Image 1 (cartoon, rainbow, N blue to C red):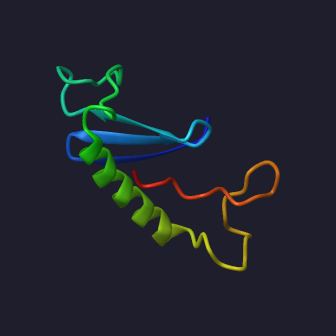
Image 2: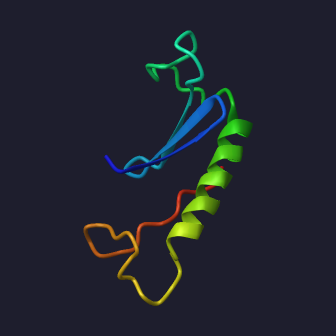
Length: 88
């Protein structure tokens, strides 16, 4: 399934385009959640917002989502533009 991921410090945020949901993991050390089994998104909404903001800002620098030329823009199978992940 298509995703966008950002890692910042001890945390990794993953956005799943098919479900529109975020997953947040602490991946700092093997004792934390290196296997990504414990989704912290519900218990750390402020961290999700922080990393989601960074993610969307970064995506905006590498892909011009709102231009007239769609040659380099991600498209869904129906030809529609893939929207940027929402910032919670």
